[in-house]
Image 1 (cartoon, one colour):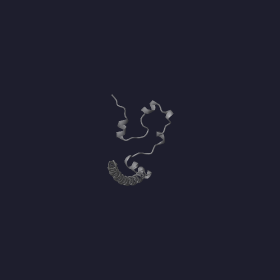
Image 2 (cartoon, helix red, strand yellow):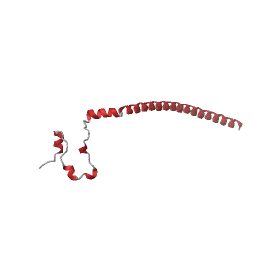
Image 3 (cartoon, helix red, strand yellow):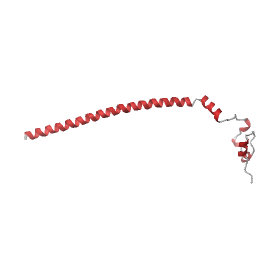
Image 4 (cartoon, helix red, strand yellow):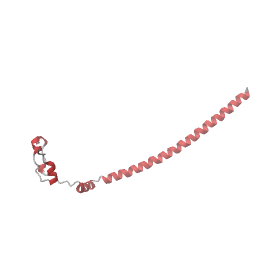
Length: 114
């Protein structure tokens, strides 16, 4: 009977050693994965900082103003163009524009005649 108990204890000890060995290597693998993830997070933070700096550079008001002048071809608003919303009626919307417009814009503004 004593031999059976000893054999069971030895087998239990071997099984326990195997389980501890597996847990140890799983923990090492997880530690390595944590290190890799921390490095990836740091790389993403650095990339995000670069993108924020680039965003700030691209959104400078003087740059946007220069691009607007170059591509939008806008003119300053004239006082005749400003109205109070309560004073606008549907007949005001049908009037001809007060300011001269380009021929292509004038054609687009004319109502279709049948």
